Length: 310
Image (spheres, rainbow, N blue to C red):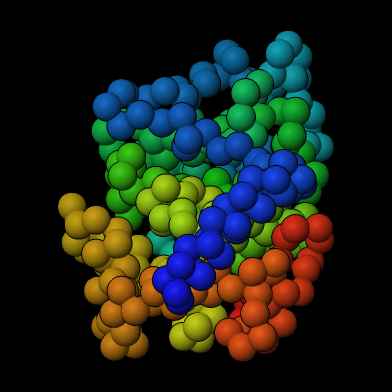
């Protein structure tokens, strides 16, 4: 009888979710990493100086832009991008000890990190100089320039630039690349807009509790934050990437499990089991004994787990 009850509960949940999912607010921000194919060379090539002839330079960055044509942008916008980029560097590299992007020699003019603002179909993308670990960022000119969306996009993409230092992208690893970038977006830029994007992405894991980690992308930021909050470990995500770098070729789930056990003597299986229960018994599926305040809503149909603090 108990198994039949659980089955009926899950069946009801799936039906109920299918009716609600269309009502989730559209807080999406498309990252061009979604379009990368590791069997290809460089799918978003570096624009040259004839296309983007103007520059704004800082200690760590060169922002390339144009003032006319389809790629048209402004000096003030480029300065805002440069300022935000330095803020990302100070927080992620300076304070959180992530590895800096690998210098690219004379590509883009010198070895500072290059950001290109041009007409793009996506909000932003972090590409690499195939087949190396050197990378660069491209931002869509229609979004860039100091807006909330621009800053959130840049915070997300800048973490990708650091990820390229640790590893080369593989399709099977997309879940942790995008999940980490969204997790770090919120860490670097804890603004209402960025948190809204984060919650919008993470809600996919709540509405579909049967969705596996490797089926997800940005929404896996929720699992990474769960690990951080559950074991009060702000360094776990970065140290996992360091272990990923030191064990080239291992799959991220293996690396993450090894790091979790090393730091907290916890197996990945047990963490995933608790996370699965956590995802299930929340919002309209909340009961009276699994998690306190699990039925609390943030905005319509988006929820916050009680152990997560924004």
